[in-house]
Image (cartoon, rainbow, N blue to C red):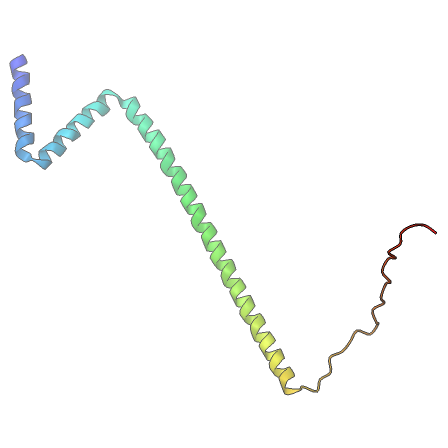
Length: 124
């Protein structure tokens, strides 16, 4: 029986050496498959850990993309607002340059000046 096992192992090693890269990949696949069949709980834990990590990464990535889209939309609104404001100020300035005789109105009530506190703070 031992000779049969060693004969099969020799045949497998010859096949893997003969195949080169493909044989090495097949041998590694068989090794991983045997390990997964022997220790399924280890592979399940890999799935849970790396699957959870992938889900978290996907969640954060999508949240980042949504935030970026909101920022782009707000920047566009702000840009349009400033363009409209500049156009409005340009039309106002061009209309005032046509009528330079328009007086600037002063406030209706004069500002009362409050006297500064006295420098001498001693009571009299």
